[in-house]
Amino acid sequence: MKNKLLQNIFRSLSNRILLDFSEKLKRFTVFALLTLMGISSAWMIQTAFSPSTSELLFAASPKTIDISRRQDLTPEEKGTISIFRHNNPSVVYISTVKRMINMWTRDISEVPSGTGTGFLWDKQGHIITNYHVVMNNKTARVRLENKQTYTAKVIGISKRHDIAVLKIINGKNLPRAIQPGKSNSLIVGQNVYAIGNPYGLEHTLTTGIISALGRTIKNRNIEMDDLIQTDAAINPGNSGGPLLDSAGRLIGMNVAIYSPSGASAGIGFAIPVDKINRVVPNIIVNGRYLRPHVGFNANDTANKVLLKELGIKGVLILEVEPNSPAARAGLIDSKLINGDLVLGDVITSIDNKPVENVNDFLDLIEQHKINDTVILGILRGGKTKLKVPLLLFMQ
Image (cartoon, rainbow, N blue to C red; front, side, top):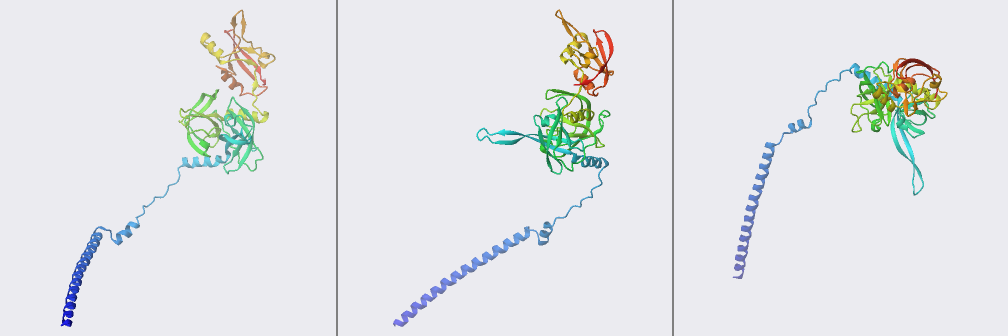
């Protein structure tokens, strides 16, 4: 009786366990089927909207574009490249330093004070640049195209012309000098090439044309005339660099720009090479610029009054120095007699070339050498025209 009861209990438990397992198995089967259906649907959607393997390979290997062959350089381009390659080694980067004293430690250190451009003038290692590039310095550092750096000594200057001459100390195997040309035959419109170091960017080439000739500007309180105007880009750092013609010859030295912003505005100026050729040899020989001495005082304020009041163009002689070339030539100076000004001689020409102001006079005199004789056109007493020979002495 007891055994039968136990058998019934066991059978009842077994049936319940089997029912639970069967229910769970059904649930698992349904879940598994749903999961497989979801995976299958996702794969079908991805396949429908995804590129094929071949498409992926095609996308990874884009078709290259055919590049056309570069045609030969134009004759003008070849000419420009030739000019740059031929003259660039002769252009130098100039930097100056100044000594500063630390007020606390009393240590002396060197700090940069300025940079600019220069170029080799001869085989002896003379370098030409602007005076304002090396102003108040006795030496400068000079770096060549090949990055060799030398110390150069300032051997002479001309403030009036903004020209300085340096000489490299212990220079060996230096590049050749730039070949000078002529500036008296330049024509507005011809091509020019400027090489320099604008903003410290060494050996930069810019090109342009001659925009005008015979320009006069006031540069650092010095009136400079007979300048070459160019639209070749000239910026701070180009000062002292060469201006070349299409034959690669030196025709000028870049000196100034006209710009409200301080950067190139297409108006640059260069000192003509004919003037450089007069001044530089003088500095090299004498250690400073010596011009022929005339020996009288004059100023443009008096000349402007003369023009305004009497309509006379020329240079009024205010005072003649004793024993000077002017005194020996018999030139008469102005005098104040009983409160009235008695005009002296007025110089109206030199060798038949007109003179209207002091700058004209100096420019014409500087074209001559010491012991040359020039013929002055003189207006005496406001009426009498004379031709007076003048022998030039050393200043």
